[in-house]
Image (cartoon, rainbow, N blue to C red):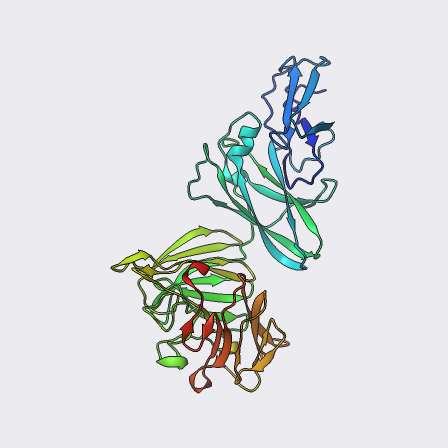
Length: 439
């Protein structure tokens, strides 16, 4: 046994259930020339205690007695020593295991997100630490803890009240690279450590790139993704353009009147231009970049408070490499009036609506051409996609899904003079049907 050996000893207390997060390493004590450290960890945290008699430091060949005591509801299963634990890199002293399941659907390059409080993990070990965010790494492992991908794309989004010493909390976002079967579960180890050890920032290839530009003379966010470039107006929270990989604009907002320009956009949530509330154009919303990383950008928009308002328009866009999620956090309430909303795609498939060849497919199995109409509440999950068969190698589509089932009417019809689509979730004619409390 060498004098500079650092032991990572792990005690496992098992219950008759699968655990989705296990802390499987601890911070070793500093070792002197002829002294050795021993640190014990109980998994899952709170399931029992483990003690060593005598305590460290230890000399070579010294006998140490370990005692494990399980809390009610747990039974002691086995010891795991550092010789048994497979460790990705000895330069890191901590890791936590997380799992992501496909939840019954086959996935490809699907993002997964994990809420992690590193401070709480240290507390569960009876220690403390100040997190170095540069230390965070994510590796994928198999069922035997063998590393199968040491370069998992990830980012760490800090919580709004993040504090490296007292609340080192946030979301770890990863890309489940490649295909994941419908019944599969994938396992990741998140490695982390304390400040002062000189960790270099992780090197993750950007898959989402945020910049600020002028779009049709309106200040906008530009998001470069794997499927194309998305433009969102900063003062209104409306998607004005979505240029695919061939440069075709599937929205084509511009200042021309009506369906040839200014009526277009996504999600156009408040009806008409309505002072540019989640509708492209010059509005009065306040934009904020909540988080920004190589695989996800989160944008927040807050409406201007008007006289009598008790609640303002508020929503977020979460932009990933292959899709974007919009969430209406709050809809406006003014006096006795709670404003309803809808979600619309008013745009130009492949750059221009062709009413004869473009078509729309719905979650109930129905299909209409770009020149036809459809009405009726879609079954859960409520989705539809609009296809231009003439773009790309074999046609291309833009896909929308409402993740919250409702009984409101969903509709499609061509806009005035057949110049844009009008695909609406929660719309009947000119009526906005999503109630204020459905966000």
